[in-house]
Amino acid sequence: MTSGNVAPDRPRYDVVVVGGGHNGLVSAAYLARAGLSVLVLERLDHTGGAAVSAAAFPGRDTRLSRYSYLVSLMPEALMADLGLDVTLVSRSTASYTPVVRDGRAGGLLVERPEGPATAASFRALTGSDDEYAAWREFYADVADLAHVVAPTLLEPLPTERAVRDRVDPGIWRDVVARPLGEAIERRFRDDTVRGVVATDGLIGTFAALDDPSLVQNRCFLYHLVGNGTGEWRVPVGGMGAVTTALARAATAAGAELRTGAGVSAIRAHAGGAEVDWHDGQRHRTVEAGAVLANVAPWVLRILLGEPEDTATKPVGSQLKINLLLDRLPRLRSGVDPAVAFAGTLHLAEDYTQLAAAHADAAAGRVPAVLPGEVYCHSLTDPSILGDAPTGTHTLTYFGLHTPATLFEADPAAAKAEAVARAIASLDEHLVDPIESCVARDAAGQPCIEAKIPQDVERDLAMPGGHIFHGDLDWPWASNRALLDTPARQWGVATDVDSVLLCGSGARRGGAVSGIAGHNAAQAVLAAR
Image (cartoon, rainbow, N blue to C red; front, side):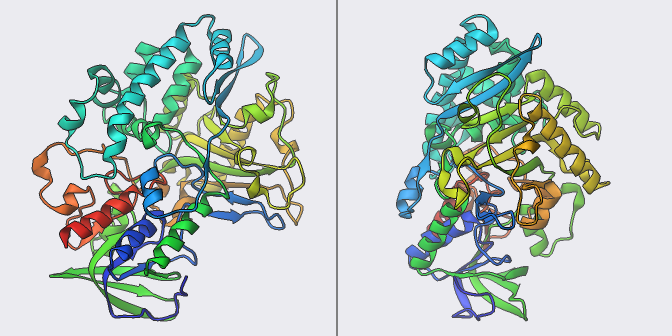
């Protein structure tokens, strides 16, 4: 990687990519391989954006995936195209949901792959086999939809009708046409089962399950469609292994990567655009035939000279807590911690709890009972632990219904309150309070790191701390008349012909997928 204080090799490039996150690196790799001159400008001192690994705690060399942490949507075809030396590993448990009913601790286990223990767990929780039969039927229907949608993600946008005509009308209604909550309430009876299904529609998305905008449906689809299976896998070596491989692919193809290069303006003109950036010492300008923006659309509008519009600024919704543990805690249900924590551990995510938490947050209150999910990546990939003693593990908590608006008035106080409630929702199900298991850093401080949307915005320049750069779009066009240019055909168009979106804010963006980067590169090549 080239330092930001070294002048670019040329005054003009075929393509300048603004932002060195994973999508920008994907675009750079594809375009450089096609023989184009490519310059990537990244304001931070490293590439990777949200998909990085870091030693978050002084004196502990365990490398955490501090922001993004699992991979589902990245197509295997893209990884093969770029020759990425990345291993993605399946988690042995899909999910475990601890519950307390009638004063007794229990839980719902979903194995990967599902087997007799999953069926027995549903039966023990719900009293019959009916709910598990409904579960299997629903996810089989979702898989049919995923098998149709997934292959289109690296192709020009299909029309809505073209996709709908290949899908059973029932699952199209349940996932696309009507609010997701309707399908969940019709298909399932158990409060816990309903909630586990619902959570995939609420990751990073502040919405009710009956929201008529269907933003929760779009979030749900993206979380279940990856590679036609929807499985979320752990990258060996942490998320940084993914973007390190992408950076290698881009530089090997001839792309130039500049870190410490903050872009301040983009000025479009006939035949291209000028990009102003700062290398830490002085301002520079570079000419581009096309600019690919790996920043949020809201940020791009400012770079293009529009006034900052706070009314349209995205609102992120998540609480992220990273922990390093000396040992895994025991659960009150008696389940093996190595099983419970190996997948997604659902906390306070019963359907009624999700609704109550949304109501609290919509009223401006940190939810009294905070829903969230916990992941222990070190059970699947111990390589991230470094030289940590035997028994050490990472733990990541992702909280729902924590929109940025909750933290505006007093960020420190609201953050402390949210963290306390997140820990309480975990401790409810533990024999050992989680803080008794937390490791200490070199200064003797607990290895706990929490990030609210405001922290994400500060660290990564994602407006409002929105992890998708804004609400997700359907991965198709409403009609073919809207697909009259290569940029529109690939879902990466802006209002400026020479500037395209290549990040999570593009149609078919969101998550660590590289899809938007691939599609922006294809649009540039098609236009040439």
